[in-house]
Length: 207
Image (cartoon, rainbow, N blue to C red; front, side):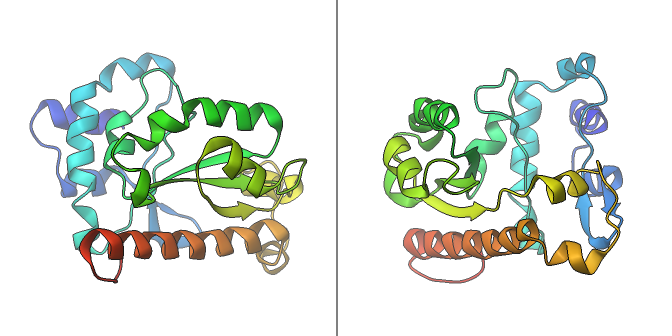
């Protein structure tokens, strides 16, 4: 990320530069990851102008057949990449179904959604742990946001996914509640993106 910020200052932020700092995922070379910051001192390089320039670059990637998924961190985080969130086709907020999580999401929902985008289905929630203790309907009712998908509460396999435990059987891992629900969530998000595309442009097609 810091390399991109340096490139932006030198008017050299482009697709080639972006590709040069990404890394292939070990189990899927078709998917690339852009490493974040190594320490908090590097945050100073990520200015508002940089985020806006990076956002302008990223929105061009779908025309190259590249979908972009951004982890924008916690809602309300200082020095957040707001420009990336604002330019995203979809903004999916991941939340637990616990009361404190729902209250926090409700408090920030209006800012996330924006004044002019209520009917366009651009911002929604992904609920982790449906019914533990509250339902998706409870989340939607309390926050005013649609719940696009749910992800299973599966801490053992979540730990494996984050590197805390070894994946001893990839087949068993792929069949776990976590991974099954993640694949379902991806499908649901694709459906949401296609519906939004249809509403905005009067046609279906790939988001």
